[in-house]
Length: 223
Ligand SMILES: [Zn+2]
Image 1 (cartoon, rainbow, N blue to C red):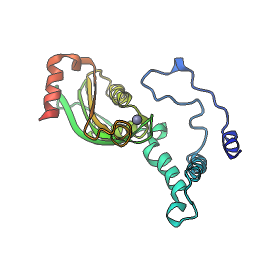
Image 2: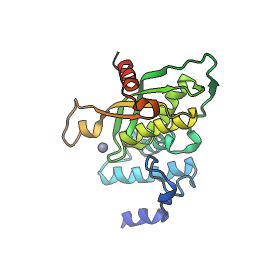
Image 3: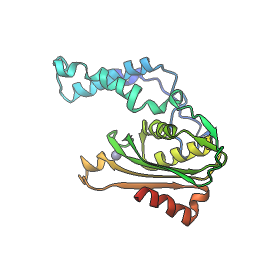
Image 4: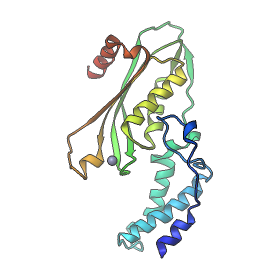
């Protein structure tokens, strides 16, 4: 009975027109940003409360009392804040005045994401490289782009491609490479319970499809 009440609170929503979306986009609904952050927090808080109550937890306990609100805020403002385009980092670009024509590699960018199948953490390191086609990006912006796409429910493959595509669009070049190695808590703490396995994904485009360029990038990562 209670459950029925809750689901009736949720307006029926239409999915985005699939044709307007590309395969590497996060599947979002057409009305994804109709609600304000505060409205989302309020709504999520109710649902987290309901989950906890259903699990049998006593929410009058001091320690548990603030959890629904805390989780709701964390979802909207922190760990899933990368869903909202308003949080997309503004990339300041520079002209490549020094005519540096070799690859630039930024490796070991630590990120924390969530697997979209279980909503438990994926964490790891992203390694990003590009060869300037005339534009240069501030290094911290590469970090911010990684964090932006990590702060979504993700699959590692999509995260890898989204970072690559974003850099291509910003830098106006296809010469971009991204490698990610990550730990999936859904593999470590449940299911098969493998705590040692890591997952690797890669995105190579433009000159990075060339074996020599690829090898140079991978050598940087492994050095
Ligand atoms: Zn998972």
